[in-house]
Image 1 (cartoon, rainbow, N blue to C red):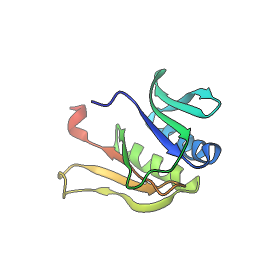
Image 2 (cartoon, rainbow, N blue to C red):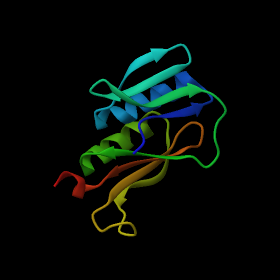
Image 3 (cartoon, rainbow, N blue to C red):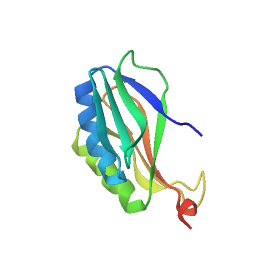
Image 4 (cartoon, rainbow, N blue to C red):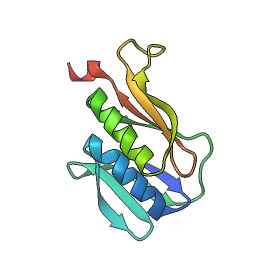
Length: 122
C-alpha cells in the first residue's frame, strides 16, 4: 500500500544507529546515504527513510517481522541501542490470537512496532 515513508528525526546520526541495529534482524539494511537523508532497504529496494526534520506528533510506524524470534531479536537490538520499552514482545490477542509484536520508543519518542503476522507466511 505505501511505497515509502520519510521519518523526520531530530538527530540523524543518533537515530540511524538505533534503526540500523533494530532493523538488521528483520533483513533490512541501510544502503542509501545522502547528506541529510538515509534510506533503509530490503534487497536494495528502499522503503523507509530517515531525514533531519521537525519531529512529528503521534506518529506510529510498524515493521514486519517473519517470525516471533525476529520480533524478539529486533526488540532486543533496539533496547540495547538505547530505545525505551513500550511493550515487550508478546501475543496481541486484542488484534488477533496469533499476532505477535513488540513496541519501542525511539530517541524522538516515536512509537515503533515490530510485528509478526504468521498468516502472511502460510
